[in-house]
Length: 167
Image (cartoon, rainbow, N blue to C red; front, side, top):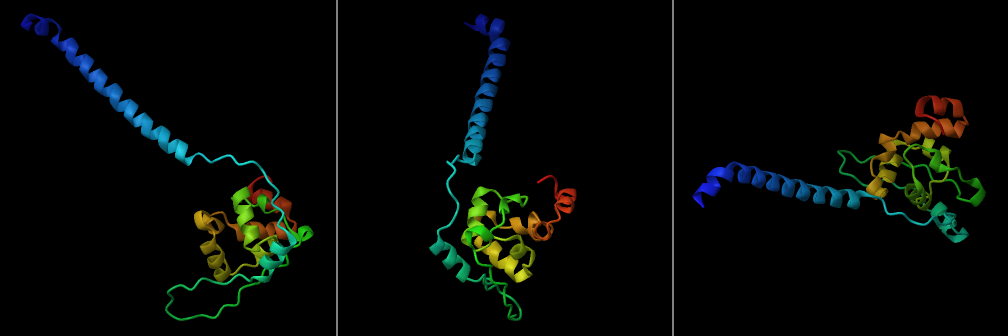
C-alpha cells in the first residue's frame, strides 16, 4: 500500500485539487444562477393601461403634495396640481428615457399624464413624486425627466434626440 502512494501520490493530490476546484466553481455558479434568476424580470401579459373615468377623476382631483422631511425651517410650497387625466389628454410617457411600462402605470396612478406637468415640477414636486415611486426612487433625477419633458412638451423632437438619443 505504501508503494501505491509513492507511485501515485502526486496524481492523487492533483486529482483531489481538481475535484475541490470543480466543486468550488459549481457552488459559485449555483449562487450566480440564483441571483440572475432573482433579478430577471417576470414577464407579464400586456394589458390595457387606460384608467377608468372614475379612477382618472379621482387621480386628477388629488394634488401632488410634498413629503414632510426633517428640514431646518418649514417652507410652505404649493405644488403644481396635475392636469385632468382624460383619455385624450395624455402624453406617451414611455417616450421619456428611463420610463417603462410599470413606471408608466405608476405615474398615471399618481396623476402624472402630461409632459408639461413633469416639465413644470419644482424641487418640492420632484421630492414628493420621488417618495411615491417605491423601487423606482431616484429615477426622475438620474434620468433627467424634467429636462426631457421640456423638450417633449415643446415638441422639440430634434433637440430631444440630439441630447437623449432616438425616440
